[in-house]
Length: 133
Image (cartoon, rainbow, N blue to C red; front, side, top):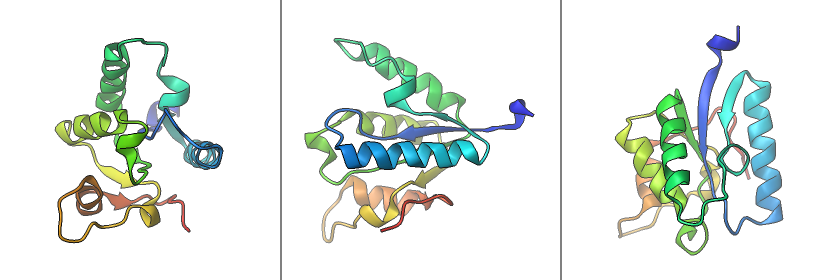
């Protein structure tokens, strides 16, 4: 039955992740996998040893294209930490993949201005396995 597994790409920060976030992300990935999903989790499944970053972008692109859906663990203020999430989000949009928020309670609308939080809230559904606060 392995061929019937849902393939999920998880957009998440890699750099500057707190220990609490690492634990939360590992638990989320485990929940997906326990529910029959094959998860591409970039800290684990994308070779991060890339001084330029172009190979990381290409590897993530291939994994996003192969995914049935993309789940997003979004951290407010992401620009100061792991900017690759923006790039992966753009690729997921370009590939027209279904989007699911892993941590919807953390993705707050920004009133009166544009922002990726607003775009995510508009385009993504809450994951059935969402982390709730």
